Image (cartoon, rainbow, N blue to C red; front, side, top):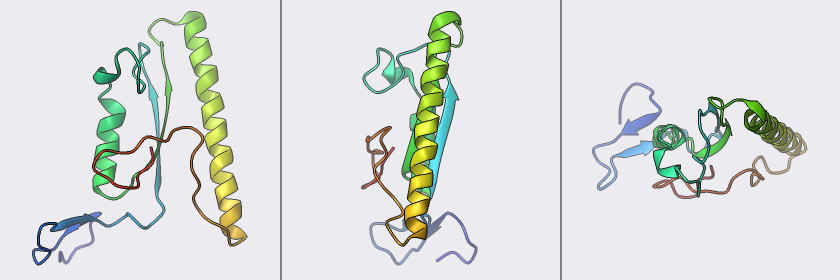
Length: 134
């Protein structure tokens, strides 16, 4: 095992899986806030395949063991107008819901309850990282 602390470690004696994430059991959550010039980058959207930002960030953080990922995006910032205003309002609502979720989880943890619950925002799995939420 590596002598210095890193987010991912390597152990040559581990057959088949010499690397493993060190942050898996530390309850870390990543919140990705983005702005997009167009719309339709979300799962099932018309240009989902062109969204390289959130999937790349999820992959990188999943590699070190952070697989509890939430993503909120403002879209149509190049178009402006009512579409942008509606997207900002939607994103603010999603952020408020996420803050409420995190605060509720912390209250439960303080009272001795569970520290994680299923997010109301998204339920997708991070490819290659079992049990991940994003």
